[in-house]
Length: 145
Image (cartoon, rainbow, N blue to C red):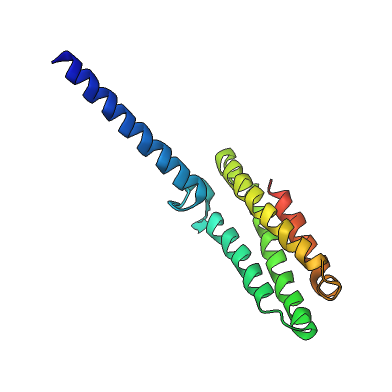
């Protein structure tokens, strides 16, 4: 009887530990993300705002198919850059926990942005049209780290 209880307790502990690890992995990967209250500032979810700007960069870059569209994209990318400037300014108003959470998010986004900047710089036409603005966005993201 005691052996059976011990076995059941060990099994329950393993199940709980497995669920904890799985939930932690999902949270880290963003698959189970829920709003982080530490990133809420005046009713604005800064995580959502930041991720939205990063998605906007992808959309803008995806719409470039000519020199003319690259030049038009530059103005839109500058708007994204200004939005990230606002985020940098407002990040100072977050709690230490919020600043840490935003920093962790910024590390991931900086890595993605470095790849995009590298791709832009690989094309002389894109580098001339949007390279400087893309580099500026990357620098602003790094300010959040």
